[in-house]
Image (cartoon, rainbow, N blue to C red):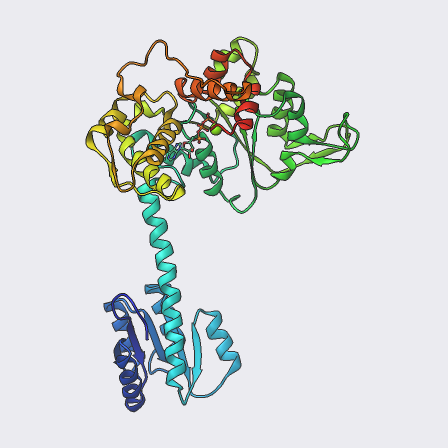
Length: 456
Ligand SMILES: Nc1ncnc2c1ncn2[C@@H]1O[C@H](COP(=O)(O)OP(=O)(O)OP(=O)(O)O)[C@@H](O)[C@H]1O
Ligand SMILES: [Mg+2]
């Protein structure tokens, strides 16, 4: 017997009243709601009058036959579970019926137990499809696009741009401050594109040593340079037919910028140490949190590459320009943090939310996410997050000029380093460039240390 939800509606089409009565009695006993008609034309009218979950029809129904009825029923409800009933076994016909979307094909005399098992299975399948569909629709509505949360005018503009750009193969430039969701936007473009089943490959140009970037991108042959003991595929090859996401493209050397331009224009390159030219079909998405225009002026970024990339660009809006998204994001990150850390938090108070709404968010959504995560981890179970749970520096309207870092005596040098980096990251709103500058170290060194100390 089927469970949960309202009784499933069955339309039964058979010209034999005795058999129909028997099937009806059997199914109604098992909580199905059954309507019976004795010919195809009446069935046709019933299908137009209300939704049905199941159609059981005699293949030779009068006036409109079973196959055609099935087509009509599927037109009204593509997931309808159709069971066709034939006078005698007919393999060719059964195959054709299944091909056209019948859920099952049975012959007389009917085995009612088997009929019920089939219907139940069909309905289960149908519910699953609906649930997934409904879930997806609700997620899209609530969360925007993919995993991007936010309903502000600026975010809706981003979603629209992504939907418009996704089907094409043009290179894309995503610009925006740190933590504004550039990674998520790149992923959304890929998953909404025809390339969604091919690889999405990411390379952060700042996180690997400059000398290795070229071989990472294009690969190398054995002996191409010291240490190249084996041939290796580059990211372009790995991403063939898919999307390559180059993060922090401003970090790329001028020489590599030139090579990149060539790949964009001709989809061609060579592995390091190899004279053979390779061709790939890769869609390129680049991201940057730096003002490339300024870099062009200083001669650090090629203008031809910039103009080429800029044709299709998306600007990820900073959080302080779309404060109305903060409650939605906060709510989302509270749920997420509760799930990841097996915590329970009742929500967030009005006053605490006011503080979040007033803050400048230099680290944008990433900073909000980190702060909420910290608040959830520190909160007593079942509690509503309140003002006292909000970190001190958010409670001051203006950021302090000087803040100090406390280091416990007995800390090792590497602990000291970890604490200093962690605190500086907080103060700079998780802006790696600002943090590196404050500490007087290179961006790459910072990346290495963040990884080493597992700081996010
Ligand atoms: N609109 C959003 N909805 C949900 N989560 C978001 C959104 N924007 C950013 N995030 C989350 O914030 C964090 C930072 O996002 P992301 O890595 O995409 O930023 P970014 O712009 O690439 O930053 P960076 O320039 O530092 O690389 C991630 O954990 C991401 O999941
Ligand atoms: Mg990023």
